[in-house]
Length: 254
Image 1 (cartoon, rainbow, N blue to C red):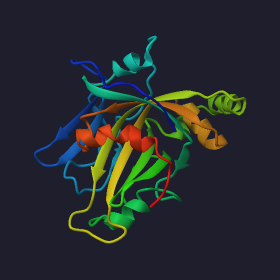
Image 2 (image 1 turned 135 degrees about the vertical axis):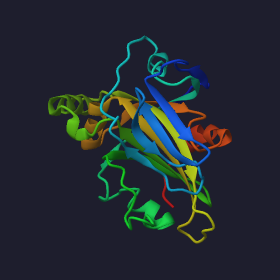
Image 3 (image 1 turned 120 degrees about the vertical axis):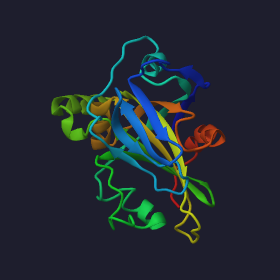
């Protein structure tokens, strides 16, 4: 459910942000989410026909809780300076294990791109992650949403997860925060019912890891404040501008 959309805001640290996006547009490769200059996630290549990707790297080892009265400004201060679309969402996360039931990379992605041509295996994200929402874009494209933790659920403190689970059972709706990107890709020269454009809205979870796990375990909703980086995904700006409307649609599968 889409709860609120704020106007696009200029946020971020122009000098030394803790999180940043790095890309080599000349080779269409090496898109990275960096934490303190270290690779935290490898992202979808720029080519426009490459598979969707978020693959955890060694720099993804911590969560973030900046102080401030305005959470948009507080979390925005961690990010590189740029345009961000704040979105308030209500989600029902479902925890997925790589290559397990419901894994996007082993199911929908393989249906469209097939197995990796070199390894002969599905793409491996190196992390459990949450699936939350999907809906058709049109007859030739489909929208998928993921919440990717900066640290795996196995690192969470069990007592904290149980506390938030109890709070959710009592009716409390907790809020998590993420920086998000929209990547859009489709295989080159392919046709047929399984070959369509994939729109991937990926939320990299900055704060709320225990809350997210508790929501997944109890089936209760959790709120997510998404700071959608307008110019950091492979999607064009007009595509990013469609995200609020797509996110307000009824969920559905192809």
